Structure formats: structure tokens, C-alpha cells
Length: 478
Image (cartoon, rainbow, N blue to C red; front, side):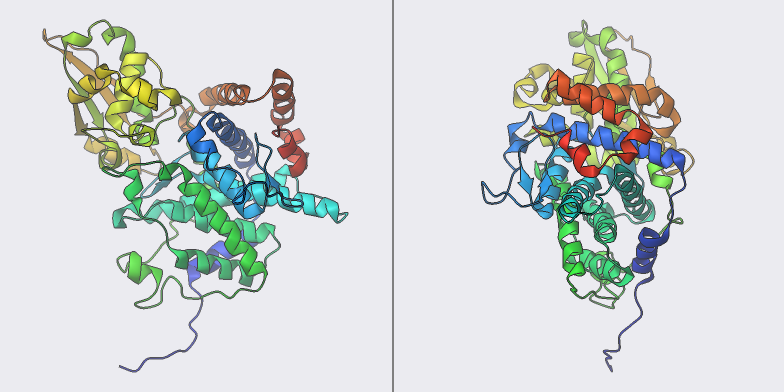
């Protein structure tokens, strides 16, 4: 068979993403308003994570004591880092507690993970520009890049299931960050495509650290790793590093043939602002999102069962296929990362405590024998309707139902929740809670005076959009 080394045309998916990032004007007021709440919620999650030594041990420069001129600041810390390391630090913080926003489709993920790269580069560029006598970036620029990163990651997730081939969803974080950060750095169309092609060629980690028997803390820093790699590839492209036009479609050696079972990657809808407008906030509980509604159901049942624990015969959890595939676990749970990705553990905690907070995944709480006793009595059942509604683009429900049966033949009501508090269908109800969550999170780390300054700057859309990025980041420094 004759082989040819003729240069092929560029993969259309790379071109579509590059053209969207460069040329699409975001006109949706709703998208910008939602992006502001995503920004606050995401940073609040990162600040809360600073309570946990397992997170903070990973932060800071690679070489202790390193300070970079005009470097990226890391909120809540004294670190001044190069933007690649800054992106890792911010990305690691915001994902650590599994409490930032979520997108659910054929692939899952957390689009605000991209904030690690966007904020690190935005802060770095602003400080460099000021040093050069130029205008810094404004938070409006950050919000626009957040909307576009959400859109790239989320629309890729609509039709392209990485989990079905054993790959982790943070690949889409790397792709989205690479695209928008190259644009922020002043990259042209060719440079964005070059950077994107290298991001796909990198491929991605296996999902094994998210699943039994290997669930572990890598799932909490994997997105930081992905967004920082996107920054690195963007910086390389700006120096003239070449790209690979058919990184996706090249026969035998491209991403699709090697890692995607020879299926073509698709963009399921035009790129605009759909994902930001429909993103899911984790308002109530730091838990894997497929279990959010189960947690709501369990908390509602707490008062009815807490004094009858010995009388419980069985507990049914009715759920959707995706939840069964990734968070239905029996047997030992070995660490907090294992527990916050277990449908039964989350439900048991809700039943026992009447609430769920990050501390409840730690070893001290997990040693309570009542938790495993309840888990052993749980039966997980798929509802085909829940599974259909989960994939319905007009619904995107994340339904669960919980019912407790007692030994005397009585039972509780079957408590059902189709849409969690962070769903677009419950957005008006959620906004005050998102603000409460943000205030509560930053209160764990900052003085009342500093907390007040942060809130005054953040709660007005127009004021925040006009603020320089470096001044915004300075609000969160210690």
C-alpha cells in the first residue's frame, strides 16, 4: 500500500473551536450574570479547601521560596507563581472539595475548572501590562473567557463520552483552557489551532482514580493539572511551536483511531453561551453531582428515621444509569475522595446528620459504624425514565428518590427530587443560597473586614465587570 506524506487539511473541530474563541461575540446578559456567580462560587470553593492540609500540601512553587516577577497570585495564600504553576494551584483549590459547578451529558465535568488557567493568565497579563505602562485586563474579559471555556468543554461533552473509553473528563478542561488562554495571550488563529492540536495529542489520564478500587485524591488535583497544561501549551504556541493539523483524524495515529474507538468527535450544537446559561451549581452539598438529589431526599427523611435506626429493614435509592455506573459502591471506602463519590455513603450521611459538609467525609466521621450499617441496607435501582430525562436536552434532570422501609412493615414516603437546587429550573431559588455559600466559604479564611471588602466588590455586576483583574485578585490575598 502506497503511503503519502501530503499535508492534509486541518481537522474541522480544531477550526471551529479556534473561530469561536476568536470571533464569537457573547451577547447573552444571562450568560454574563451567571458567569459572575460561577466566578464567586468557584473561588469560594477554593478558599474553603484551604482548611484541608491534604490540599495545601500540593500548593506553592515547585521549588520552595520561588517568587516570580509580575507572577500570578494564588487567592488566600502568599504565593506569587509563574502562570503555569499558578493555574495548577488555583485549579487544585477549586476542585478539591468537589463543590464547584457541574455539567452532565454523555460526558461529565466541571467547567469552572478552567478558571485556574483563566485567572492565572488574567492576573499575570494584567501585572505585566501595568509594568509596561499598559491597561490591565478587566473582570469582564475573565467572564467572557469563562463563558467560552464553559461552552467548549460542555458542548464537547454533549456527544463525546470519554468515560465510555476509560478516559477522564479533564481532557476537555485542557482543551477549553488551551483555546481561551491562547486567545488571552494574543494568539492568532494558527497559534490557537497549533496549541489545541498539541492538547489533543497529549491525550489524558485514565479514569481509574475516580472508581473502585482505586478512588483517590488525584481526582481533586487532576483538573488543576489539566488547566495548567493548557496554559503551558498556549505559551509554547505563542513562541512559535508547531501544531499538527490532523491530530484528531490521522489514520492509525490520530486521537480518534487510537483512543476513541475510531469514532468521530462531534460538536453537537453551535458554540455560543448555552453551557454557562444551563450550568449546574452545587449549592447545597459538597458531593458528586449525580448524588445531589439523593442527598436532598435523605436530608428530608432525617427527622423521620433518626430515632428508628435499629428498626430499618432496607432503604431503596432509585436513580439513573450514570449514577449507577460511577458512584454505586459497596464494600470498604478508603478515603474522603472515595466517600464523596459513593451514592450510598452520601445518602447515609444525609439520613444520619440531616446535612452534608466536607468534614463528614473525613476518617473521624466515617468511623461511625451506623454509616456502614445503613449502606448495607441500601438497594440501588435504575429508573429508565430518570435515565431518559437525564439525557433529554430540554430537561437534563438528575433525579433520585429515597425510601426507607421498617421491620414492622411501615415505610416512609418515597421522597423524589428530579432537579437539584443548582439546576437552571431552580435558578431563582438558588441565587440567594449561592451568595450565602460564598460568604460562608470566605468567612473560613478572611477577617470580617476583608470579607466585607470582597462582598462589596463582587455583588454588583457592573462594578465587578469593570474591575481590573489584578485588583480583584488582590482582594483575596493574605
